[in-house]
Length: 204
Image 1 (cartoon, one colour):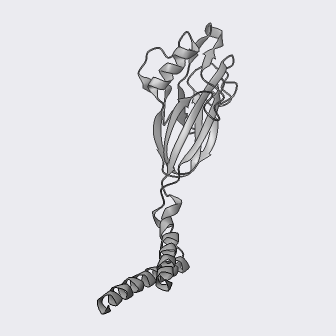
Image 2 (cartoon, one colour; image 1 turned 90 degrees about the vertical axis):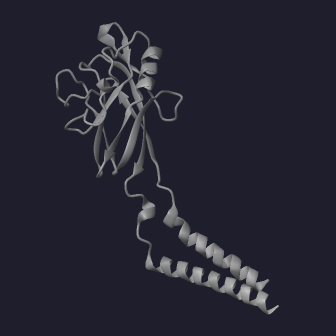
Image 3 (cartoon, rainbow, N blue to C red; image 1 turned 30 degrees about the vertical axis):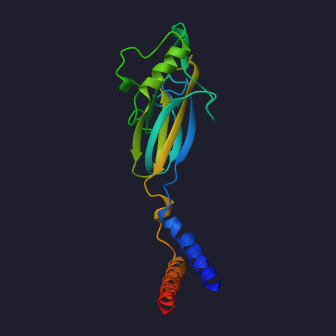
């Protein structure tokens, strides 16, 4: 009975300190809400009333996809070109503050016309387009914007589901020496108990 207790204790110690070494990478997830007036052109351009939404992100691999309410955190579905009779669009741009279309561009869907008569049609096209993916080798500001070139009278906006995997997950950090000692102790104890169990079987 005592040996069984020691065996269980050794296994618990082993799992406790070995599990973090093999933990899955942590996913980063955030919804970015971009107003129809968050244009890609530099802030201060006469056609832009706002500017890109800048978000500081850690190094990682990211995917950006269009979403709409009731998706948690989503505030928008699509935006309208109000001055053009209410045409609707749902694509977006992702890039750096100096080049807001560097990673993902609205024009990457290959369509000659990216505006549609109804919000439903526009969002379906955005879903078919699907957004895109990009990699950040280091932490930096990332710019999110709509694809229109005249923004002051736009209505609505787009919501972007941003999901990322860190390039250097927390589980890859070098373990503390004390943790390695405890892990080694657990392994040694487990090996000793197994050996003792085998010896007793041979004696009996």
